[in-house]
Image 1 (cartoon, one colour):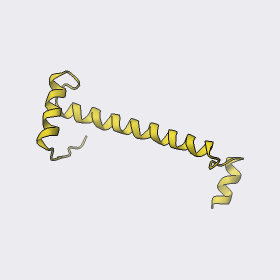
Image 2 (cartoon, helix red, strand yellow; image 1 turned 180 degrees about the vertical axis):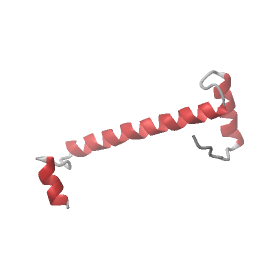
Image 3 (cartoon, one colour; image 1 turned 60 degrees about the vertical axis):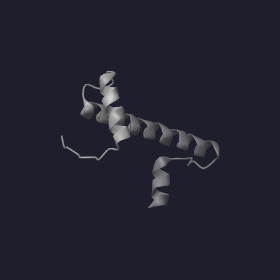
Length: 73
């Protein structure tokens, strides 16, 4: 596990402290780890939704994936 030092504004630091106090995380590092995990999950969800929109708009690929891969190379 690595350690990253990130400067926080006083407002963000206060939010982290309040989240620890409310039980969201066991300590400040846990709150930040949970926030990063949540952001990663949200980004994955948004990527799926973007892909669904593209398919709905007819921008998706159709056909045999092996044949499509040959065309891309």
